[in-house]
Amino acid sequence: MAESTFELIDSATLTSSAASIDFTGISGSFRDLVLQVDHPTNLTNSVVLYLRFNSDATNSYTSLTLESSGSSTSTQNRYSQTHISPGFTSGYFGESSTFNYQIMDYATSKEKTVLYRHQVALYNANYKYTIAGVARWANTSAITSITITGNRNFDAGLKVNLYGLVG
Amino acid sequence: MPIPLGILDFPSGGVGAFDWLETTEVTSPASTISFTGLSSTYSDYTHLQVRAVVKPTVARSLSMTFNGVTSTAYSWRTVRGDGSAVSAQSATSRSNLQVGEPVGTTFSANLYGAYVLDVHDFGSSNKATTIRGILGSNDTPDMVESWSGLYYASTAAIDEMEFYFNGSTFTGGSRISLYGVK
Picture 1 (tube, each protein chain N blue to C red):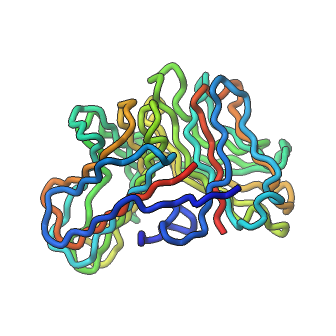
Picture 2 (cartoon, each protein chain N blue to C red; picture 1 turned 180 degrees about the horizontal axis):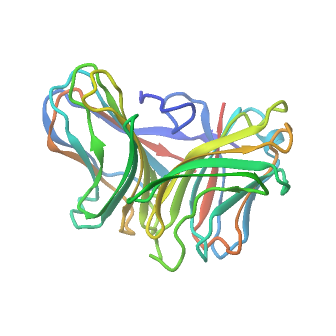
């Protein structure tokens, strides 16, 4: 029998500049987590977005991306990183960007695999691309916290939603 | 409310039309994972989403068939990144769909490949069935793929899906979950 499946665990929208957004005390009652980051269209600064689990700052993250700018393709593999790094947010009026992370089997004793997509909408051709990616956190602990940081502070307006997926 | 990404891509919150249907998780090596009775049991749904975290005992591509059909009725296309090159691959007139190659047991014991696949309009009886999705793993082979496939043996509704590895089996801990989209 079908059950209620998709639950909003927590959300945050920055009302002022901030260095990070943290989700803590994540229960293990879901199968997967879905993290959605939406970057508004009127920000001043672009930011390279980082993702970290359980405050683990060791070199235990790998990110592999497949990218298209519309005129060329590329792929990058970032081994032994201290965070997952899928790409830039946009920082120019009229552009928007979204990040969608599928954090699979987050509460199990498997190493954690994250599928993600990232898009920057084209407006004035500063940043424009679409990315498919997979990331690995080489750790078998259940994920109980997620920290989102960047290479600089986030501007007000950045919105992040964390969902739990039953299954 | 998150911005919908694609048609089904990843589920959006607050819509109330995305339901978990069933999960199969194997605790010891298993040759197949199957879902049956789909078109009758889940007739309230238009689309299906398959979410899988799987690993073969010997590195192989994940194979997928519909309605028990193993004739030459499948084709697929994919674009893959492995960290050093982008490649495009395709196949036609095949006896199954091959959906990427998750990590094998010769690599990290606790690492599995991940898949999110959408099966569009699975209950329709007037079209071939289209599947598409994203998949990846971060060990040899490193790969992330944007993948699409077609099952065109008939226009019959999809009543059964079977997953397996040619020449290999699912390791314990592999799981495949099925969701319905109204």
